[in-house]
Image (cartoon, rainbow, N blue to C red):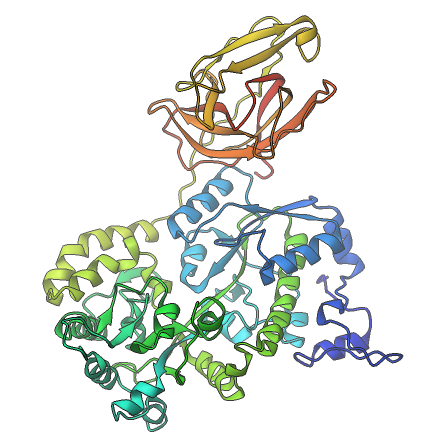
Length: 618
């Protein structure tokens, strides 16, 4: 039977099905905060969650758990309500780094539970078996009834072989727009892009012509005072022409699309704006396009929908001019008028060990997304710019959504090297041939069957230090230091312990204290749990930390350090620590373990070290 998420009463369910409306109290005129609306689960779901771990592990690329971001608020509500912990696995916006982490966790038979992904990650995550379908774990019926999930976008970007792989909160969908300076349009006597759009005359050629005309050296000092375009999205021209450098064949295999006439025309568009119309595109200040555009020196900015609040929330000086926004212009081959749309959502990692708990977190994130949107629309600074007309246009643009990076993400550096050559003036044929072999290799690797590495199992490494400290040596760079056996009353258990001492005056703030020799090898594709007893001798500060890390024996460098804050021992208390080292995607290099410190006193005593492999699935 399908596990269903339910509200406490029909009244609450009905109220939450009306978007952005808070419940009113029968006995008071006060309206409760939307987040006071109860989120409950069925008895069956709760029983399934109770049988799972108290901790789920999630990759949240770019998300700082210390920031009051809406997904963090959902996590906080989830943890408080269900007495579960969400552990954030360190993640960046690098597809390469994150896919290595996911692959390594699955291969290590200790997969993470979920990853916050984007449509640029799909179908890659599906094809490479990084993720699994949501199955019957997520209550899609409830999410659709409450309008908390964007089913249209899920159909277009997250559905494969009849199964959903990406759950997209309703509002975490961002079409790409051309934001434009209306004051500059008036000053230059140009046609309004919105009127061109409504009259079906908004083309790439017209867009380029206007941008070129707006690029001017007004004061004659040789520097352009106004510039046509700013953006970070150099693949936007592929989207304008509804094409990508990679596509799929009739068998679902990936093939290069570099010779397709539509793609060649997209290259021509890119060369025209970058090279033929030199100076029209601002690539100097494009690190923060919203801030640059807000200064009023650019006619156009290509950015997603969220730039509305970014211009006012993150810009030191919000726009002082009148602006508007219009969909990206349509290239000659984009006859069906597809729009560039990015989205984000949550996916189950393949082999997710806690699917019911993870599903509940996903549902609460989707609920929080509606509250976040309400907050944005009520915001006095930028809420007034989220007009009904713009919301309607945003919704209409998602009906035919396309995102070139869903395919181009398969290529080395997203294919940007080829684009850079085109933008530098190279003709299509020579630029393509320079990168064809590299991209063919990329596509072949993606099309190949997924191979999982042979994993190595071993007994735990246990050190009680009762008779010796064999295997441990002083760190390679620490000065005035020693490792020795502590005995008698100095030992933590009265028998023997490992004593590490170093000269705090002769060393820097962070240093490697001790390392295991290579006979105690840590293998790739393994999650390791390191547990030990310890006592810090000396005074600690708020900045005192210790860390464990993989140690590359070949190059004598650490990798993937995990820091922990020690507890003081004012009365000679013995403390206990457990540290998890996540798996590495490397079964060739010889790794062992090192122990280090940051701004720590000169002595620490350690005992009962246990290094064991963690495998939760088969």
